[in-house]
Amino acid sequence: NAGVTQTPKFQVLKTGQSMTLQCAQDMNHEYMSWYRQDPGMGLRLIHYSVGAGITDQGEVPNGYNVSRSTTEDFPLRLLSAAPSQTSVYFCASSYRVGPYEAFFGQGTRLTVV
Amino acid sequence: AQKVTQAQTEISVVEKEDVTLDCVYETRDTTYYLFWYKQPPSGELVFLIRRNSFDEQNEISGRYSWNFQKSTSSFNFTITASQVVDSAVYFCALSKKAAGNKLTFGGGTRVLVKP
Image (cartoon, rainbow over all chains, first blue to last red):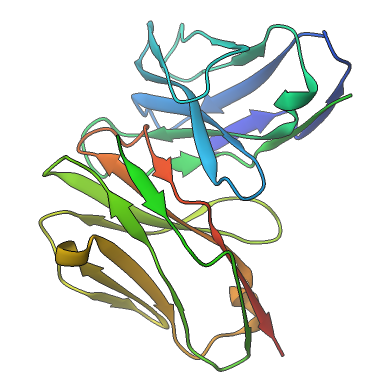
């Protein structure tokens, strides 16, 4: 049982490049989310989804795009990378109906130069 | 809007000492969930505990214990007889009912346990 799988684990981008962070879960969770972690700021919600075909913005959505065509996958797209997007990105999933704790992937460390 | 405050940014203790991590939250919801996660140096996030707003019972799990006080909007976490393996960043988080994918995190408290 893999849980939540994120790829890649590390990535270096040049300013202006685009890329997609992949996230897949095999627990049949309805809910999926993307967070970014910056020093001293905890984790902040970027985008979330309550099911296939349904996504919404979180606290810090600018510069990111998401879609959810299947229950299992929830990719995060950086449209035009900026140094301010240097961060550690976490994907999470949880059940819609209890238990409500989120299960997190291993994280993707992204550096934009 | 929801808010979680972890006022302690870093705590350093010697092994076998007890350590208490503070968490204060703000929410207008009457039903909500509180969580603690551990982030060891390897970077993953490990779920420790969930508590709903209607359950104010304290909980103990091995060397870990949690004190939930609705009257002061606090959900504090104590590690008893700390060990080097407890060295990590600990996050307190809050979500509305049935919104486990929308967590509001505190800034985290780094715990360093020295041998």
